[in-house]
Image (tube, rainbow over all chains, first blue to last red):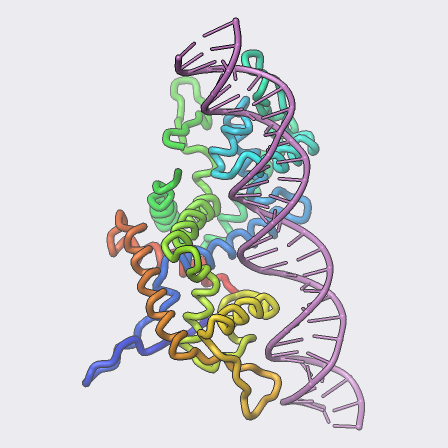
Length: 158
Length: 158
DNA sequence: GATAAACTGTTTACTAGAATAACAATATGG
DNA sequence: CCATATTGTTATTCTAGTAAACAGTTTATC
């Protein structure tokens, strides 16, 4: 992958050498970058660490205690049916509890346990260490710029 | 998702309001952005258009005719076993041919057909239109910066 | 107040993408 | 020649996710 080149267009007196097609696409670069970051995340959090989506769910439950499952699914941008297994895992590991809400007997409010809050704080530190290491070749400005540009794309959500 | 806030830390005389945990992580923003772009890609290319990975494979075959399947898998960063179905689909649709190579009876060099080259040119235009529309709120500079930053992450490949 | 519509959590079934391990055919290096 | 490696392929498994249906419950409408 180091030095792929192609001749995109030729005129009579010059040959324009441009980047290969794929690398001009944001989507392609986004996917390739995502795969790298995701793999490093899993490696950094280890065998029985959190998968990215479980970490994200726990993060939101800790930050927004008493969030409902439907609300959490909306925040994560996934179907609520897909959230059940994630919440099951977190509850099985004793990191949160499904609790009944007085006013509405349908909803299960999610409340982090003390163990859950502590586990999240540790996991968050591990994730920060993973990102610090993986993105060591980016400056603080570059990281902020990147997050800002990705947020601009994320503005198309919903 | 519009205005999530949390109090990260409190001192005696001020309350610091910071971004929610997840949005400070590059990995999280990367994934959310990737999901949006990928969904728009599929929507733009339509029902029986190319899936992203099939488009990528065809792109490389057109740009590097006679590439082997193993070589193509390496370029795409996937296992060669996973490439078989992709090449099967492209061959079934008449867009490339598996051809024998004189020197080595193991390899199947992949050669785009005329139909394949034409289909690729059209698909590439569709992908460009999709990205132009989706990223209309980014300037040319911003797009170039984004690609550059993603490429810096991609430098960790392999 | 009855009834229709909507929402919540859940289960089941399904799909896509990808990894791994094994295999036969073939090629390469000591 | 023999061991080792490579190529394309199949079969198996895993993960992440969607979609549809459901029973229980709440809300809205007439």
